[in-house]
Image (tube, rainbow, N blue to C red; front, side, top):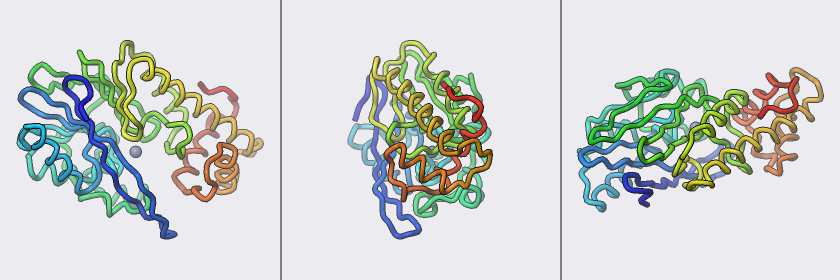
Length: 289
Ligand SMILES: [Zn+2]
């Protein structure tokens, strides 16, 4: 799917099987920026996504060898799974925030420190990082295309959002929580600050996230505000069920909060628990946005 003059979106479907044997259908969006002489990927999707990407390039009249750069919004398995194969095929460079580098270069470290169901079925192996990005960096994609880097932590320590200058297309990775989806972030207060940072960018034409449909113009800002409202609702539920206890039992808290939010309580897992517990840092504040 083409979005604007330079950007193409590819929806990569995949399946995750939980330890209880439950198979869930998921997807991740990855994006291709078509310069006149080079192609940049924003994330790479799960293992084998390279076949979908290469097929799309051929069908749109481009060559696989034109891929010169993959910018990773962060290091989670559904974003880096095909990076090794694409780099191996094209020799492209891989860029990521400094806080995510170790989990891409040593995927077993990530599997130990952040075990998620089906990790090894999503990731094609370790990849050497060629360029480390920081907030405010501008990446020159050649042919007059430039990307500005925004450090937007919260979902993960080194989550990046990337603005294609001139076209005002913002790639937000997993930085913006989607109302009605499972809360997955490491640090709720960092998420709030990151969303405010994105909301302050004026004139965004397209918002392209990894786990939601593309948004345009006024919808962009509504979507960011909806993410902030969702964090506020989650916060209020956490404070209500923690009941002043600074160290509540995580699974019980998680089930109660999920119930209040209308989400399935059986979906409680350590990642969701971690997201909710991160709100306790702000337990003395009822409003966080
Ligand atoms: Zn993620």
